[in-house]
Length: 160
Length: 160
Image 1 (cartoon, rainbow over the protein chains, first blue to last red):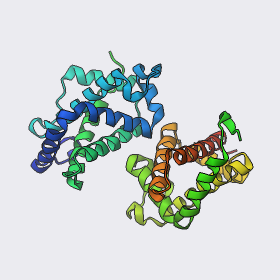
Image 2 (spheres, rainbow over the protein chains, first blue to last red; image 1 turned 90 degrees about the horizontal axis):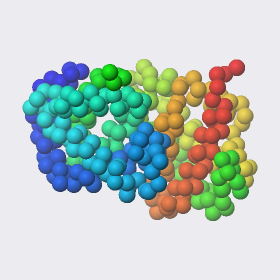
Image 3 (tube, rainbow over the protein chains, first blue to last red; image 1 turned 90 degrees about the vertical axis):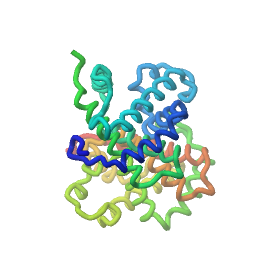
Image 4 (cartoon, rainbow over the protein chains, first blue to last red; image 1 turned 30 degrees about the vertical axis):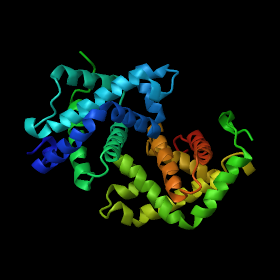
């Protein structure tokens, strides 16, 4: 299957995504939080782009709003990756994708931050499924993530 | 000793820097390269800010200009950290610091990239001296790095 940007996404890549997501799904809350804590470890200032973290006083790993948010992001990312080959594109409801686009636009998210998130996501998955991790699995998740970012970027404009 | 930003830098912190730098010094070339490969793994697009990488065709880890550059940066960073308490400030020749400022200004280096570099530096040192690594050592290197970035930022303006 050829995705946007002319990238191939093979049955083998889909199988790697499905296999790892099947294991991670039950721990989505923990893994999502791990992902965001990793992003903030690499780039502490990016907490300031989250309205619910700007004036937060409790530690990040105890922040209930961050927990809810990070689980939702992680599940959405993995579900979109899991459905990528079947649907041939990122399947998020159109209104959600538009909202994601405008939220990222309004927060001023830049390419460097999408890259940090990519690195943190792959690292989180690597630590979640160390026994099945491979260069091929890393590539499969990388391709899926890039497609999601492309889809969000297409909607990155002021909300109308 | 109180540094700019009112940050304390204690004798203990200086000792942690000196102890780890003494071990790393002989491997400065390898460690410098590791540092930059880590930065580029987290943020691949930042290679584009290095004139000598823009049209390079060989793999990054074979690039002789990158090797020279990364060793110089690593040594400069560690030497500045090692002298921080004795001199009370970042000691880099003033002309070098001005050049560093204008190079970073002209390449459009942003805060998120200084953060990625901080994370990559601490991770490189952690892997270089795993047996002596501690939260205190991490903090000492973190403070020294932040002082270096402050000194560079003060010089970040168009070259006159």
